[in-house]
Length: 111
Image (cartoon, rainbow, N blue to C red; front, side, top):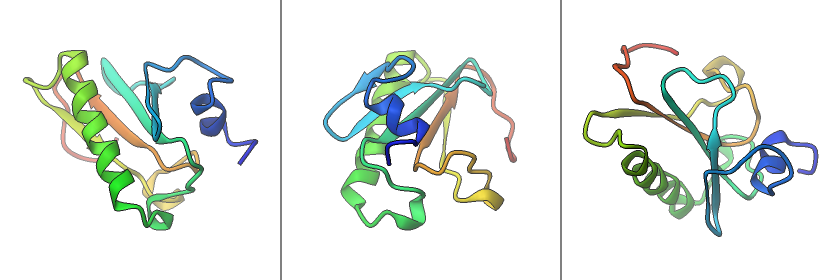
């Protein structure tokens, strides 16, 4: 989808990527909830997790998060991975994305 902000970021048209491969792109959240708050998005426009049938892509997103957690130095202390789905689930951009959040103590509950 050409007007999707996450599609534009993944294509390198906006913002700065901190990671990219053939399937996903990653960048820092503009409104971080912790010292480390990275979004991992598929390069293909998929509105939400309910519309994703590609288990390999979802697994790749998780493994990318693990790789980035190590790179950011938060894998030993711990981190949170989160996917919101649609408006009531807290999704504000309708492009599937995985939040990697850490670098400080994360309290349980909605963010």
